[in-house]
Length: 327
Image (cartoon, rainbow, N blue to C red; front, side):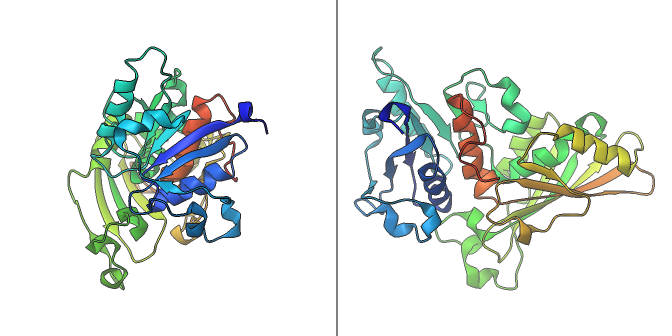
């Protein structure tokens, strides 16, 4: 690989679970190279010291750094991934906006993993299986939420037949609560437990409702396992249908989509950990054929975040969308 072939990627906020997955994916990518990896808590420490498995492929002396927001545009990245908590991305984006006043400055592609720009029409909302047709070379990409990805993929094929709000019961592993200590990521408090939270108005409820163009009611919970989420979606239908017709809709909708797999049986969350795709299955109908239940599973750190960010980066640079993603 020559230097000219490399695409330099920086990660802001790389200490968390998703940041670690991004580091692994980018380090193994055929074209991307890590330009910088930021974390205030790990400033100066070797990234390799936190990559425990040989497959991580992060070697050398790459170290975490802690650049000020205004210094980010000077670090020479062709793309920057913001892996920050909700509400923290704006200061970074403002630094790139300020640098853009100089006509010689080339704006990098920015992929934001938080919810901060998912409601902003000036950003491309990057759920490729549903939105890649709307990509027009935008340099600012909002990565969908983990639950929101699973919900939209579970509901989208039936959108034209929906009769009312869709109810989604969600259960996630505690990695979805991040690394800042709380009840929702405390293994002792979660032991033998299922913890409900944000039972109305969750940001993913609003996100899915906006991007599907149909009301969705979402009821999230945290479970004792570390990674992986399950959505059980209840879809009211305006006319009766059959299971064969439903399966045909889903298989047609996701034909040629390697990261969406349509199963006959309901998928298990234990089988999705460390996998890069979403599984959809179950497809149970009420006796009158006007109520459908669909189950979706997904690794919240991968297709729910890091893998999808890589899809969006590949798309932005005109690469094979699945480059660097093990199928």
